[in-house]
Length: 235
Image (cartoon, rainbow, N blue to C red; front, top):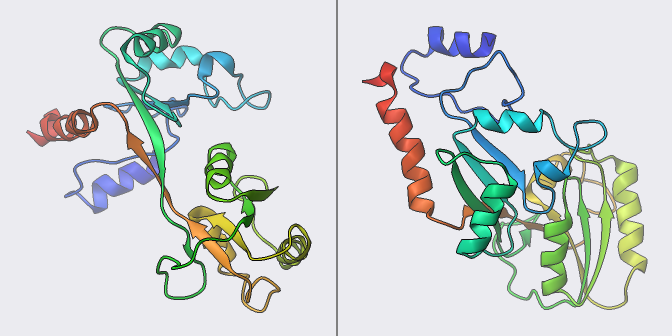
């Protein structure tokens, strides 16, 4: 709350504040609430922390104007979309969108950042420090014939010992040409410790990914733009 008050006082030209993971903070009363739940583990099949991954009660879905079912491999057809609406317990005035993940070609972690011209290696050592690496693991298995995966906890701060372990795993997990692959989020933490480590001279690639709305992406964007434009304080 104090941060929002400071923005209002110090940056009066700001017309909107976008918050991530703020739904469970009851003191905040957002004018537009967008609630995400995953295709693989929707809220009706999950539990509150620490038993599960929910940060708020499933009944709090009633406060959301927009719900997004994330990490869909494909867009469900019309009848299935209606089934999801019923299973999620949504009202008729709550918007339901479906999103998936698009992956970029791996780029060098160290170097000019351009796409690699010869990404034909059969072997990949994937290492991640994200909450749910399953979709990325599935994606890399479609690219490479042989994938080994080292999963660190979410937001894991990589240490020199971690990098030495990864270098050792890389040396032994498969013969022939191979790559190490990680995510953009992990690469940000990796760059501060990779210099002088056993990983520095190994081929480490970074896969970028972005969420995409699968059904009516233009309408999704319009709902948000129109809300900001027509909010009473902005008229």
